[in-house]
Image 1 (cartoon, helix red, strand yellow):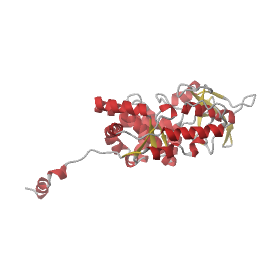
Image 2 (image 1 turned 60 degrees about the vertical axis):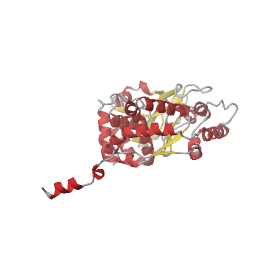
Image 3 (image 1 turned 60 degrees about the horizontal axis):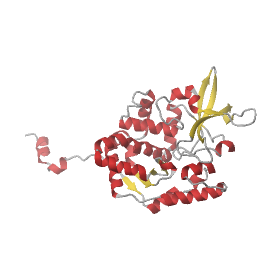
Image 4 (image 1 turned 90 degrees about the horizontal axis):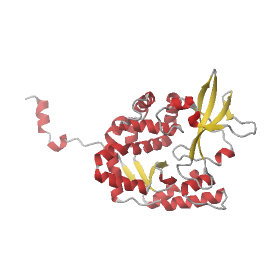
Length: 329
């Protein structure tokens, strides 16, 4: 008998067993989550109409600093501790995507998935800092679905955690993702976002993509029209999330590499619905959340990992996957 074969046969059985890949999960306590949610750098971007939408508070008679202080307290108070059932459901999700994440996105696999339980932002899943924020209602659904059919549940919902963890990586590695946004998606990085009070006061700041310094070229004959995607509220007094969100394109003027707002005859920034711009819509066909490069990346990367049929035939998803396979090692 060959020495190698003999050696293999004499290895203890336990040593030959391979374990399934796992992803590290961390669950913040209520106290720790409160500190993350109340971070000042986020609230300094928000205005009263948006604060009403994100908190559900009327904020009647408050100026912007007062509304920000009230919202900050609301966010801090909203944090909750996870139940054991909720933790188990999230672990089920992570186990479902762990093999693909480990094989295709080693950087994501090495980055702990850190969770906060809170119903802020209208209960929409989102990220703050290095944390994924999930609402009590969504977690209750996770816990019920995990008990009924954990395999199908993991396949169907695991992409949500990959999507949100992509936002965590975008925040931690901005220079890496800037190459994806410019070289693959076609955006141009700006030193800062041309803006105006009339835009800021009705804006919805996306916590997963607060940086608006991205311009996109739209061919118009032999010329190029530059736009900056943005989000705003259509209802200011009693706004609802996300029903009152509007995706818009803010027109920019480029001269010698410098960008400024394109203004109409009354001096107001020119804007129109983002969906009305055919070239932009064509560039990101099949991407549900195309209002920011951070969201485009998260949709395509999570779709690649989970095999989402909605984006399976998109050439942009394959190009994004090729970039991610090389960059996110």
